[in-house]
Amino acid sequence: MEGQKQPHPNFSAMGVGQNVEGLPSQLWIKFQKQSVFAEFTPFIVSLASGRLELETFCKYIAQDVYFLRAFVQAYDMAEDCADDDDAKAGICYLRNWALEEMKMYDLSMKEWGVDLAKESSPNPVTLKYTDFLVATASGKFEGVKDPAKIATPFEKIKLAAYTLGAMTPCMRLYAFLGKKLQSCLDPAETSHPYKKWIDGYASESFEAVAVQTEEMLDKLSISLTGEELKVVERLYHQALNLLIEFLSAQPIVHRTVVPFARMQEPAERHLVIFSDFDLTCTRFDSSAILAEISILIAPKANPSGPENPIVPENPIVPENPIAPENPIVPENPIARKSSADLRNSWDVISRQYTEEHEQCIESIMPSEIVETFNHKGLCKALERFSDFEKQANARVIESGVLKGLDLEGIKRAGERLLLQDGCVGFFQQLVKKKEELNADIHILSYCWCGDLIRSAFSSGNNFIKREQRPKKATNKLQDSPR
Image (cartoon, rainbow, N blue to C red; front, side, top):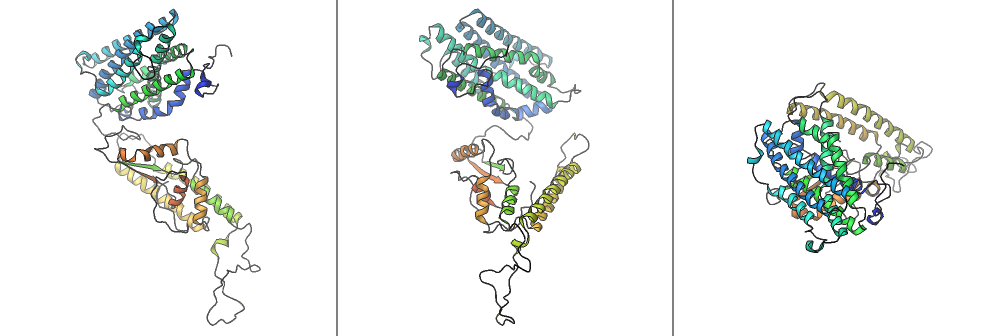
């Protein structure tokens, strides 16, 4: 299509499909999942809410200035390595943008009565990125020949590409965060203290600079080999991790509840990691899988009528039988319903659960925007939700839909459960680093059977401690919210 960017010619050498537009796009797609660790740092969450202390924000800006200074220095070095006027002009434009950004920071801080020139020196986390960037631009990193021997035009272009590879993820991540945060703000909101910062990174002008940085990386890397593209990928990933570490290290005064936080020192902290099982680890609700198995193993029709009594292998016979030829046959609760009856029962239960779940959520949600955290109100809401779950679980038990499942059947169900992408790898990494992290790992589920969970992770992933469970899965569901 006219005007559409063509795939990088060496993508196949990196194992990349030909449907990707360019090298920066492919790298962002590959590593974008890690952006969640930046999005939910205490610093970004507090900034988005407007509760971030001004002192903390000013300290962040002071540290970010060192990033920009390193950018200017790296752009200078990359411009020297560029081989044509267009590339030099493009890099010069990006360098001038960084200089203007520094001036804008200075003006903004003066509006708040802060003199950036008097702020402290770069902290260790800031230096990790700035030193990394300058070292990359100088060719002083693993996989590159002695910088003193980089003389040919091609070697210089390659070094310029490596430098842009270490800068591009910062631009893309900030553009991503700006748009994310702006989408969370009320468009009519004018009093948010950091609205200007958010709008700046969400703006079309910043997006244009981010795109130009990506296009420059694409231009400089067009002649790189597959192995050299892997070096760019490694630098891109390292830069992204260092920026996330930088955002995570920003000091927060008030306590902030976030799903992800920076790693604590293992010697000082004991981590307890909890994960939900159903629909967090799994792609589908495990109770539906268990119900399906129970339905499949049930008889097709009800054979317990008077013409076909169910006789066990060893019928119970009274000591003084009145009619020895008619042994007493105990009731077989498993065979009381056919598979069709069980499926109808499960459909009714599922439909009722969905309808009542929506009603319950609607009834406990506040009708107006909550200005302050209401702990008592939250506890009452959770109690009501727990009561709803208890009633739903009781209906499952009373229906008898799951009766007849034995331990082996449950294990087979677990083995067939589909897990979310990356789930097993995540826990494998945790287990490998369990002692190093000083961490305990727990997986929670409203399903009563730990054997189901263990079998779902049975491919050599023995990170779930075995607990004593009944041999038969005919007890009851745990009365806790799903």
